[in-house]
Image (tube, rainbow, N blue to C red):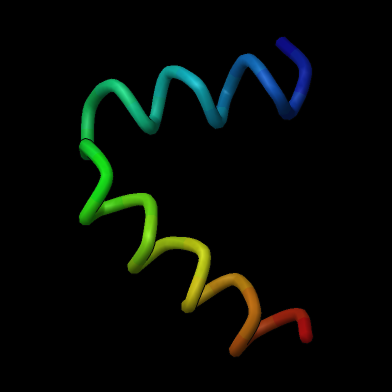
Length: 31
């Protein structure tokens, strides 16, 4: 499973709010 597929599956599970939070966390950790 590539990263894009993993993200699309996560997005379906969490919805837009979850994705926004996930992206913010991703930036905080890796940015």
